[in-house]
Length: 438
Ligand code: MEV
Image (cartoon, rainbow, N blue to C red; front, side):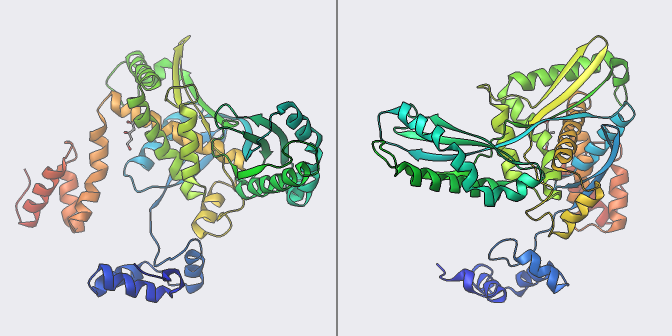
């Protein structure tokens, strides 16, 4: 056990780690230091994003160009460690750009938060009347917090008392809805909720309700955002489904639609299917400094909103048209958080023309749909390993510390075959040993 670790200087923290966990290995210290930024000011910004920082952790940022969304073209920044993801998004984007691109709509942008409280009285009607009677106070007492947001067109949209005593004894909620414009809004919502709780406590104390007190359990926004929804769709004549497959367009469209139907009905498949969608969405969320944990949690909750976990995308073939769409909750921000601080995040926003939060919802969902299209196309035609292993080949070769020349020879050797890890290692050993690959 270490006491006061957070109070140690960065250097002392590293010293302690190296002593205890790396047997004093200076190489481990060098590894950490190699990833420090040479610009001390910039390094300090990174150090202060979180606590106990000892170094930076790099992930690659790729770019998927040619995303045509509602007639506007975007080059989308994607941060991911997974090979094939950026290539797949870019390939789908190009495929659809030729067919009119993505049609996107933000259906709603409402976010929700709760004051969770206990009231041990019997007269529920009186409680409801009391909350109704003090509603204005919730608004007036939060005016200082909501002023800027109201100026931007947002604020508190509504506050309701919800009786949850069937689930937990004496448990009620103040359920509040918010519009947070271009910010994700977590701080704004939580500040409002905590003020609502104060108002509730102060006001009930002045009534004849029995008891005239509540116990506040907690005040917090919900990351489940089923009222902050974006829909993105592609559609085109079925005969255009041919590109890159050996099947007829009709047969491919049918197999593709069946694959989506499987994800819609089978949770085992749906989870993997949605994971592929999130490969795309998360990479944009990371690049733009948004909270991928919140987005993941909400997307999966939304996928099970009707009682069974299902696919976030859907497909349809009718009247000679192939239609493929996604509907997903995405509570995103383009201001606040680290959006104005992290140089790469700032770059990502600039690259997309500084989108509004609603625009970013459309871009992210389009990338998710593109990702899913690419995955299903591979899965239902060549199989996923062909493309994946080719991309993975370089990772394996880098791990083996192959030289550029060795990489060139081995990549060329596997151009027509799908390599597995063991085959790559074997080929590498041969090339290193001076053998010619046959
Ligand atoms: C791999 O990261 C994602 C896929 O498994 C998605 C899918 O199966 O649809 C390829």
